[in-house]
Image 1 (cartoon, rainbow, N blue to C red):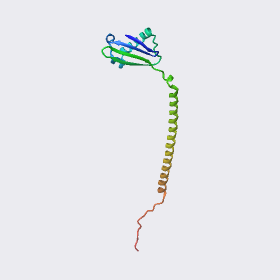
Image 2: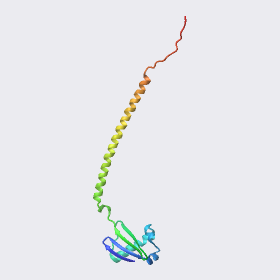
Image 3: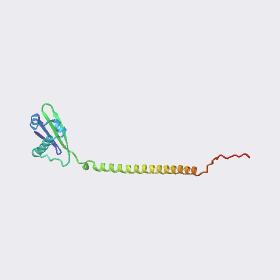
Image 4: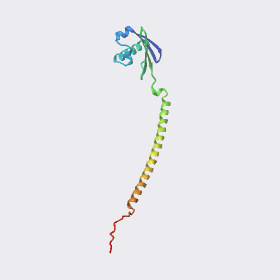
Length: 150
């Protein structure tokens, strides 16, 4: 296993085909994050601490896996910046603005729906009054009258 420090936050590790066979691991294990791959990554990090003074990230890290044909695998560990340090203030401000716009639109929609509901209620009330008037209006009934001849 050959470990090389690229910069403060990046370490490169080369695993030969022979080492991959010893670990009984291959490219797919890293892709699917198998337990074996996690163990190998942990071992690489520990060895990088000893050999090149690598400090493991407090948060997350990117792992790039490159196949080197007929030789093995190259693994590159790069520390990810935590969200709050990487344009976090701008992101937070953008999210707050989005929330404000959503709240305004929600209020607008609520007012529109309330107005429509009120109009619908008024229309229904008018229809109900009309039905009541029709029921209360006198109706003419024609009764057969007996005609008597004298």
